[in-house]
Amino acid sequence: MLHIFSPSNYAPFNIALEEYLFNNFKRDCFLLYINEPCIISGRFQNTLAEINHPWVLENEIPVVRRMTGGGTVFHDLGNLNFSFIMNNADSSVSDFALYTHPVLELLNELGVPAKLEGRNDLTINGMKFSGNAKMVQKEKTLQHGTILFDSHVQSLTQALKVNPLKFSDKAVKSVKARVTNVIDHLSDKLSLDDFSALLVEKVRQFYPAMKNYQLGAEDEEAVKKLMQEKYETWDWNFGKSPKYNLSNALRCAAGTIEFYLDVNKGRINRLWVYGDFFSSMDLTDLESQFENIPHEKEAIRAAFIKAGYKNYFGDVALDELVDAMF
Image (cartoon, rainbow, N blue to C red; front, side, top):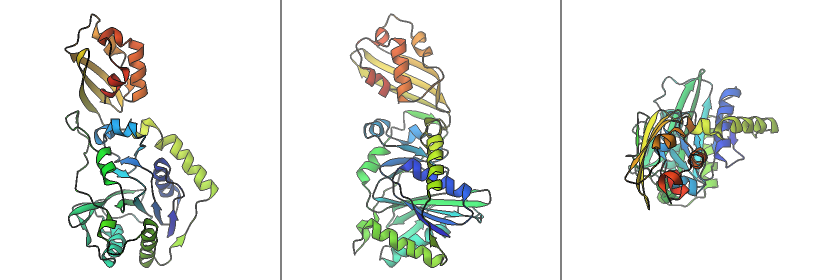
């Protein structure tokens, strides 16, 4: 087994690194990485329905879709992420005990009563500190998880606070749970670096032949190429979302403006506009400007400008209109 600690805190790089190792390394890998603030969504989720979109935009938080299923999670520099990339496929994608065991054993040795609960959560006194996801493919297994060690829980709450009434879809939804940081349960405080080192040594007890591996220049170039072509793209992170409908309303000087969107694979199929505002223009001309455009901020902004939005709504701020489409 190879132990790799990612040299990057950039989420698209680290999610690309997991795929690169999964597809190209013939040896088992134990990967650790720490991301700057970001949101990581599950493979089968409607990304927009999982995030507080205005807050994410305001704080310039990257949103990245991963290869595995499961729910959406928030990462920051107080969050440690671990991945087991193994060349022997597990018998079940729903059994998370094997590769979470080193984490639980370490924490219990440190006096923290951590355990695996439900399907894929690690908890302390009933509060979640780790969510885990898994993929079995090509006779290989990828299982990864988060460890909330000293994370900014308020930011986590804000990032994933979404109005469930806006969206109608069949995509799998994240299960909300009370969360906690590991550091709050340690009698002897540790830094995240110290905890990471202890976890590496604990995994080494299970895999005594594990050796440290540093990514070479060719590795990093290949990961960056995959990152740029996939994990930094709107098509992957948002365009892969299942079909959904969105409704939202804006109250402004013109009155109430209601937007109803039918979205498929991240592109707007139809837009309907209703409200109690006054307009002498035919709204179907406005609505037609939004057909088959990406459901993303800049495309929507451009469509409003092209349509001459003030002719329909009067003196309303463009940013308000754009924000109301999410």
